[in-house]
Amino acid sequence: MTVLPTDFVFSSSSIKKEPTPSPVLAYCVQHWRAVLAEGISTALLLLVGCMACVPLEGEDPVSPSYVPITFGLVVMFNICTFGHISGAHMNPAVTLAAVVWGDTGALLGALYVAAQVGGALLGYSALLLVSPRGTAAAAACVTEPHAQLNSAQAFGVEVILTAVLVLLCCGVWDAKQDSGPLKFGAAVAGLSLAGGRLSGASMNPARSLAPALLTNSWTRHWVYWVGPLMGSALAVSLYKYALYKKPKVPQEQATIEY
Image 1 (cartoon, rainbow, N blue to C red):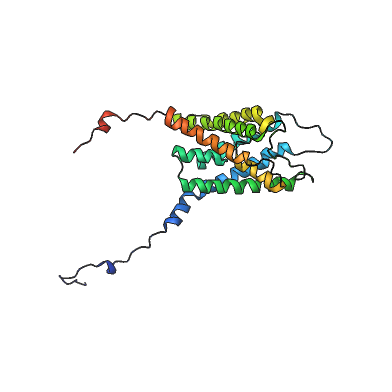
Image 2: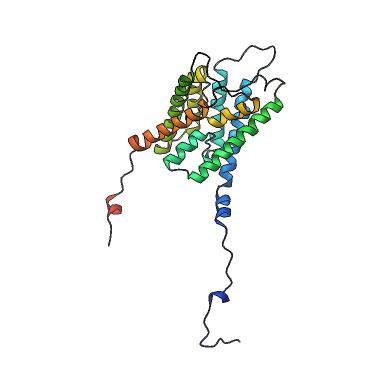
């Protein structure tokens, strides 16, 4: 049996230390599923939602209600599937609201937006591959303001529609309501029916970017970035700082013991 001398002192160098994991690696391990879910859900939004816009030769134009209902149902499906993983934002405007609200950190929000843009490009690219020739030339699913609206009016429509959508987000986050997929699906369908003929009812910069980029259609495209983001910022600020009521702390928890 080995006996240590009485004056033996353990030093930090005599103890083997386990390597400390990189903070970046730890962050990626914690959040990669959520970022991946945002990319997949946004890809499906563009792939399946924009299928309703694909023109087919010899067929009558689709009903004005067909596309909004399709997008609403896709949103409902995506929230059911991915909502518990990432929140299923599928939209930089919603992610901005989540960052301002405090549920999502700024870095994770930036990763979400990157995944949303990448997913939108992937989804619309896949749509072009499975669609008839001429789909890109026809600029299918591209959001453009109606010819009778000027840029300021189209901008105002996008601000209003996105603000209403984000107010719903805030209400659900605040009250932790059930049936979120149904509510958001119905809201997207309803808002699209209301504003689709005017501005295209994008409410989503990533949703507008992919078709515009892959069909080279940039008519007043700035409206679909500035409008939704401003509408989101205004709505979440209104709800958070004017309508939100912080829960009261019980008296016994509020008492400070010295």
